[in-house]
Length: 519
Image (cartoon, rainbow, N blue to C red):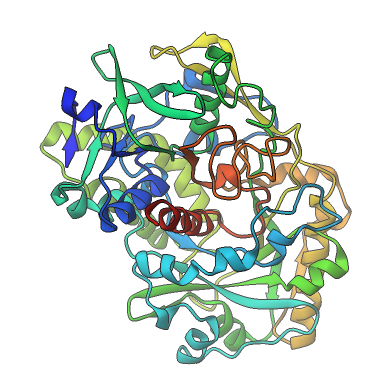
């Protein structure tokens, strides 16, 4: 059920689970909780139309970060309205703690998380027959190149309907146990010791209400989660259970992504058979390269993966335009010309930079005569200096402070990326498939090369998981330290970023949390 206003009886439901944020993780959590018989209220600050965050509510003072501006959406469905729906698993080494990477051990094991992979895939509509890489490759007639220097071929999976608002539209509108309150913002909490008894919400007409519930889940994205936690800590420090936690906002990371080499192909048939996108029964898979865990341990470098980017034609880029418009606008309910133009205007603010991203990192099959380059997605080290903070001197119309991002890079990224590129070059040459022409700045170890790489809209950290409040914001079960019933979901809780896109692992943790809440 979609709501624009909320009445008194709905503000005082003590058994309700309140999800703050109607984006990817929030809608997924709400749907799974409802399917298990729970009453859920989702609070979303945006509307059903595609929207963005006002420029005066944020600033970036460190390394240029595009994602804070164009990589998030204030609307039902959140960032899922802007992404392609790519799913990638984290690897075992991402959780175990690497002695060469400070603060990299997680308080949960890979095995505990992986136990929920299958269920999460199936919840997202990807059946067991599509979850095993080797089976998919075999069915598609793709021979694993079996590189000998620690590299391995793996597949990413893509959702058929990336937007959660579109995918769950029928359930949102028809379920009696699920209510979605739009155009209302959470600005604070009510406390009874370590128990959250309610949230303070403000609607489009102003005026504050208290909304009661039993369990509260923060799912409004890395920047907004951090902003809310810091704001409450600063304004209610005497009562706020996390008021003295100094980890909030720290250890911000994003993936570095960009071109590192051109590819000179020697065996075109084998190369394109190996790296072209696979489609089986309408399910899309993209082959990529990564280092095996043993190679990462041996070389003591960051985790990263490589993908082949194909030079595409204008007509193929228009396919991305059509996909974006369909996901962001035309799959939604448009009540009239006014709605259409408002959506188009909001969309246009994201369109050009997003189109550029897809042109640079092309993800569709192209003719074998196309030029090819190697792009990487690299992990960053977790550094306390890389952080999100708030400016209490600049408040928006809701009384919420401005978000300030100071994104930093470390000394580990450049040598790790160069090592990876050289390994791919060696593997390609040994196989006879191709060879690389590594970018000169990278080959020479020029730190300025990092300026050619950009963020990939994978905002990690700010409310990271810890062994205690001395080194984290939430515990191994995603509960905020010092509270009994406040949870955080999404990549803001990750200790490390690995090489993988963050959404699938974030949703896997949601699957695990739902299991714990209903048990």
